[in-house]
Length: 232
Image 1 (spheres, rainbow, N blue to C red):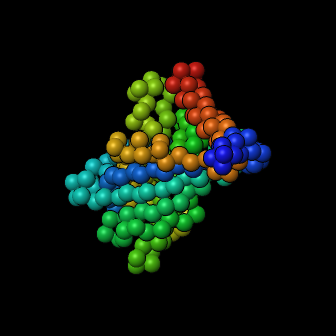
Image 2 (image 1 turned 90 degrees about the vertical axis):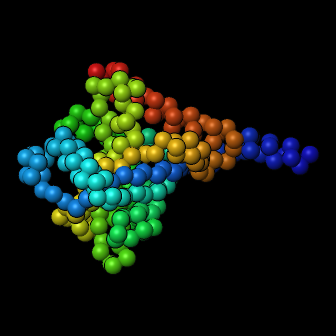
Image 3 (image 1 turned 180 degrees about the vertical axis):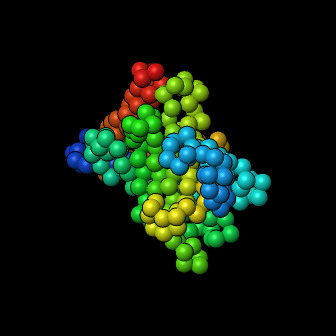
């Protein structure tokens, strides 16, 4: 009987009011110290030049075996506020391995934006921004972008969802001098782990938890449909 009462409370308990959601993600790739964009003859302030700059420095880093990776937990404290926010902002926490400068370094002041619209580039982006301090006491700002291109099909767009073009700046903000750049990717063998890590926060009932997952997945599905089908 006690088991039945527990199940009944899970299903029929009073709504908690504010429900959140969290999931984990791991990205890994290559970076190298900054080579000025002028070296590649690229303009300074366009999404295309940023993407090319990061890609070329990642290739240099691959040849030098300069690795960069991080493991983060993305936390949405209030799912409804997150959905209502046009930039869809969440908290980001975790640790970063920054080559020879330090491993397992704590991340600070982390923010994540899901499907934030960039009106100039006419694309949606996933933004990863945080600061961290190396073992030697140097502080850096991590500025990463996944670009969701609307001219592609859903299948062609899968790499968009798993590729992070990354620039690291000296100092705690992205206004600091560029320290390095590269490209990180979500390892395919971690995708199932990422899905399994999804956790509903603050739900008082089983149905409330199921509803929160459905709302979040519905939002993601609508954004992808809007990008890859309706805006083409």
